[in-house]
Image (cartoon, rainbow, N blue to C red; front, side, top):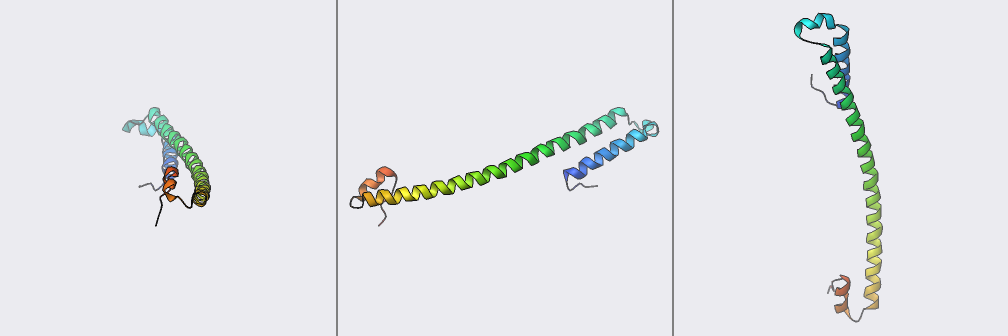
Length: 106
């Protein structure tokens, strides 16, 4: 069975470990042991834990991306206003605009 999501895999591993644990006496003959049950459960719990951590990080990243976008837009508006003020103050001398990082466009 191909798993589309991690939650499906985790569910399957938990189900498998419970099934093996409940039928261990019958499965010993094919080499399954309590160690396999424990490893199956360990995989499931580690996958679930890492997935939860990843989801929290994705959520935090979305918040930071929005914060970065807002600050960037505000800084761009501020920069534009400064440019207009500098150009107005030095209207008769566009060569000096270069000192402010402003190109004199024709």
